[in-house]
Image (tube, rainbow, N blue to C red; front, side, top):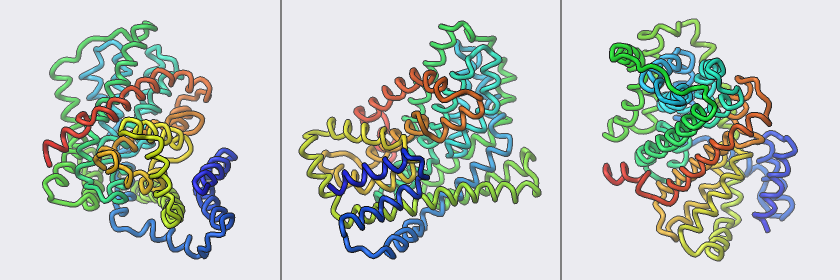
Length: 427
């Protein structure tokens, strides 16, 4: 009954247009009052603060600063030029370049919103000029932008690692193959669209000199994911320390190598990153308070009983998780959704012999799809605004991209070796 009340009240408030942080806090308070749980309201404040206190969460604002640095430092344009020189000759080439650019930029910034904005401002007008509809171009940016939270360094995977007590290094390694598979799936849709509409049947191959020149220009930015993953994997620095490395490296590359950011730009850059970080951490704190009430009231135990009654094997269990998180992802951003649901699902994983790293990856992929699922979603709104298209038009254009993403999600969910092979190889 408690869980049903939670879902009904939260979704009701969210659909009514109440901001997420207030929806979560109001649900927490109403649940305590309605069921006379006896928890003093001061507890909400204390668990709110406790939810944002863990040392590892320092990495969240730091990675946001790094992403802001690269998004303002002209890195997106350099990555686009490199991807275009390598892939632009293929059918649907400009769409393929868009997906590849989002994938590469995601490995640099770790932010879906930053990736959609940085790549979208350049590629949506270019796609429209090529003959792609603005609706499809915007939909492609909305879908491809979410690759940033699957490709390491991924903030949601880092947060899941903290909540579940799982190695962040393993989570980052497990994110590489799924991000590439999602990218390939979206690229195939671009090939289909380019051939079907006749707007992009492929162009002339770039020369080796052009490819080398664009690679050299983008190389300092592309090196960052290798530094982050290499440092964590070798134990040279922790995931939290890797965020500091990302900030310092991003500033050095943008200010000294590319010279696209000056000292006068830093206050505005830091202020923008601060605003984004504040919103993220406030929502995480509110969700942590609700998660605490849920845990204290033994909701995970109730969930365990329900799940065992409904799912007698891992296949059905994963199906339930996918359906639930795809729906939840419509209303909640990935971070608060993970904070809320990980304490419910992680204890259930051992019952079905599921590796928690695999579970965390599947959860993150579901919530990434939620970022562009109508009627709400972070990258959906950014792409629609940049492309100047209505929500109905972009939603219709999303259908083939959404279906392909669901197919890839099924592969990642049920073929465990796909995401876990790098982890097993390097453990």
